[in-house]
Structure formats: structure tokens, C-alpha cells
Image (spheres, rainbow, N blue to C red):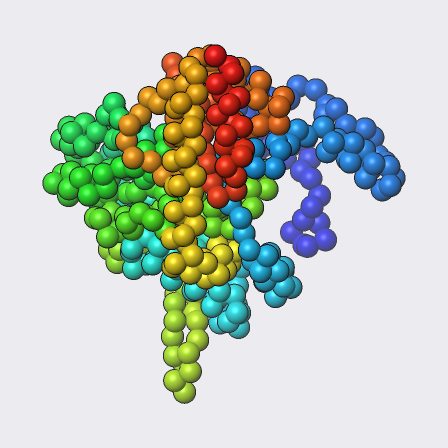
Length: 452
């Protein structure tokens, strides 16, 4: 088909032929996996065509309906974290050579882009304690799914064991990825203190598994015993995969790669990438040499030309656009280069000492908040395990009601756990970062106490 006709839609007969080829009676059959309650059965409630000035006025009015918390009074986390990014981060990523660049399809003439990604990979490797890191992962959840597939390709056993402490949405994405494969996903529970139970992990691994997956800190904010989990995985000849939702924690905690993790991955949004109403985010992935050829995304390497001058090359790109489809490790296409550059500049600007200081600030403020809230009337702490900057509070009323009540006062109090665990109706997941001043922490504790 010529380029001048490529956007002409198919005829009714052509659509019918395509539907028949895939065994669908109609277009609706293609969306059968989407729950009925989520399908739109009426036109969108938007006005018709508007002049540009009128459109801006209408959109401004819509934006005014957003409810924003008071500055400093936001205690949301659960995988998306509010951190301060130095002004130089936004300034540098806004330069046209970075802001407008896309995937280097002719990579060796894109030395600036390649070097930026190479520096990002180097910093992620140092952060995770593993020698090889890649680029262009979408976000944390799909990166975990890719890591599970990686482990299964290296050690094909048709089963992975996942801690209950892994973010429920991440687990849901993993199950979606493997739904049409022969890979089973089994979970194991936690100890009363909120951390994963090593004994339960060992029992779950008695049936052969390719991987053991934990999150550190876990979804409830508790720190895990990575070394104990690594020992359990090693004994079962499985690989340990560690998920890190809050990368700032690695400024204070031991690198999981140094504790026996074979694959470390997570969400890089906390490294200077703005929240942006939920995206775009940045998945990061690091592993040992055994997984080099199984890694999805891209891998940039350093080389020398015939004159000995340093240069950068696209060393590995195992997506289906680059190699035969049956040899591809993933179908990752969109480049997360700008987000990766943001994280690289953020980490380079802070440096090792700065990231450590930032992590200490997060933990100190969270520890203060936990102490103040625990002293508030009617509030208790269901978990005793060490934590980083997130913790669970049990309230005297339903957490959802508490969040609504405090939202009316300009406070985004946290994430009700009933959203993921219906039986935990009164539990609230609270996150505290360097962006939360002492006065707002005191205010949150006082308001939670008044709910009793």
C-alpha cells in the first residue's frame, strides 16, 4: 500500500473478513477482557468543536475542579513518591538535544544520547549492586513482569513464588503477562511484624520454582531480610528477584545485589521524575552476567574506535524491531530515554553522599511521623518491622472515611489499604518524604486523633 493511502480505514467487508479470521463475531468481542462496568456506553460529555480561545477557557474551568492538598500536606506513596528535584534537572532535560531526541535508530551517530543512557546504566548498577543495567523499561510493574520472564527463560520451571508484600498492582500485571503461558504464580505470606516470612518462602520453594520475588521495602513499608530470602532461593536453586518501589531507600539500605539478589528492578520515578498525574514513569532493571542476553530493552556499551578514541554503541537491543520476532525478549518499543536522563542527572547532582542524606531525611521524618501518630487518640501501629519512609496506621474509623474527612481540610492523608485488601478497612498507608515539614506532620497527627 502506498504512503498516500495508509490511513484510509478498512471497508465493512474488510473488517468482517479480519474479524472472521480471528474468530470474533463483532468488534465488541475484541474487548471482552474489559469488565462491563468499565466500558463507556455513551458519548463523552464534552462540548462540540470550539475556537481555540473558547477551548482554553473551558479546559481552565475543568482544571479548577481539581482538589489539591495544601503544600506539605500530602502523605501519598504506595509506589509513587513526591521528592524535591534540583532546578538543574528540569533545566538540563529541557535542552532541545535531549528533549526532542527519540530512539537512536542510527545509534552510532547519536553519541550524546548513547552517553546519557550509558551514564544512567552505570548509576543504576552502582545503586543496585549489580554489574549490568539496561534502559527503556516502561515502569516498575511491567519491569517486574519482564524480570519474571527473564528468570523463566534462564531456569524454565513453569513457576514463580511471590511475596504478599509485593505491590498488589505489580502482582496483577505479572499475572496478566503470564496468563497465556504455562507459568504459575504462587504467593506466600508475611510475619505478624509485616515483613515476609522466610519459613513460608522456604516451604513455597519446596515445589520447584524459577524465581523468588520480594519487594524491599515492601508494599506496607516494612524492610525485608534480603539475605535470608537469598539463602532460601539459593537452596531451592531459584533466583532472587528484588523489587524496589522507592529508589531513594537505596541511599541508606544495602544494595540488594550485594545481598544475593540476582535481579533487582523497580520504579525509578522517585529519582527526580515528576509525578505528572501518574506518568510517564521509569522502570529500571539490573542483573548479573548470566542474564545479559535475556534482558529486554536496550543496553549501551563503551567502545574504542581504530584510533583509540572512546565512543558509545548500542550493544544489545533484543526487541522484535531489531531481531527476528521469535528471538525477541520483549516487545518494548517506546523509549524512556528522557525519564532515564532525568534520573541520571538527579543521581549525579546529589552524588553518593547527597542521596544518603536524602534517604536519612526521609527516614527521620517518617520515624517522627510514626511516633506522633502512634500517640494520637485511637491510632495504633499494626506492624513492628523496621521501615523506611512508609508505614501503616490502624485508625478508629474506616480509612476511606478518614481520607475523605481530611481531604476537606486540605490534607491528602494516605492510601486506604481496603483498596487492595478489603479486610483491612481501618488501615491507612502513610508516606513521609523530605517534602513534609514538621508542622504538617504534627497537623496530620492531630487531625487523625480528632477522628476518634
